[in-house]
Image 1 (spheres, rainbow, N blue to C red):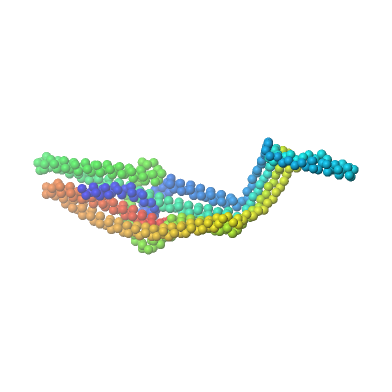
Image 2 (cartoon, rainbow, N blue to C red):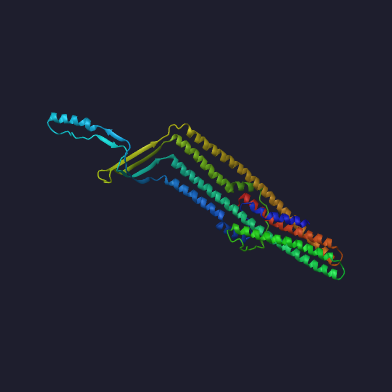
Length: 460
């Protein structure tokens, strides 16, 4: 039967629509708006994006911390045994000379008991207890790294807004799909009621010898087919409800409030296509995300150029105690330092890094141009898809009205014995097919409007 084809098409649209992912600000339903807000507050994927922003923000805090001085407490204590020794016969050299000098001057002014040096190179029972301070007066790495991290945070925030828009679209389309399943169940239940009435009528015809028994079995066979399709529709309802609740991070069996007025206000594409494309180029967060990445790449170019031309300057110092044994007597010392680091030649490594950063920037700018063209194409496709869906809705509505009128005539004729059962079943099937087509067309208009709003990024 024809209606089986249309019902299969209807089922095929249920879950694939959820794969589309972008926002939909169009919503004449306050109920749906409430669900969107709930999803934005509770969705687990969006929480992951928030955590990722927090992680990148901590990298920014770490980059900022490099602007402050570094203070460290560094005590060390060494024990040593064996190993190389420093041997110098200073006693053997000086003692005879000092003894001769004393004899010449007639006094003991010069010592004559100096010991030879025999010292371990590895100090034993030696400590160095100190505070170290280091502060970068000028460091291009620190300055540009901070700017890069700041730009990456902006890119990550834009990424979160992309996910938010995707979630809005998913929630809206999932809600439409759930309403579609309810509509399909209603249509099949009405068909079941109609065929049950036909079966009872045929039983009366048989009992009155107006018709033979096959009219009853044929009607019951049609009822069994509708019951099978109704069971599938009910299964799809539960699946659609579970997916919708999954997006909202709720229990999968939670009841969904139905807005019966949602499909009474169907949107149209009244905007100018060129204006929509320009709006999309200014609103799409994918472009903002790429823009942040391009800025970070450009800053990386400046960083590598600065490294090749400008030295780093720092000051520092140590203050503490140093000597054999932890006595702290006559062991205090202070050291102050000022330093400059300037790599004059590193085998053209810096030149290569500059070129590498420029290539990365060019690649991102090329990607930006490509994404802009893709967005314009998406808007164009969504625009004409909505127009086609609106025209299809008008056609299917007319077809449903004609099918209903035709079936009412055949139903009246059949009850008066002026039509055959095969004609009744044919036009009843046409009516069912037309109702399914109209149900699909109504929801398709809403979904196509959501796709256009997603492509334009209205409300971002």
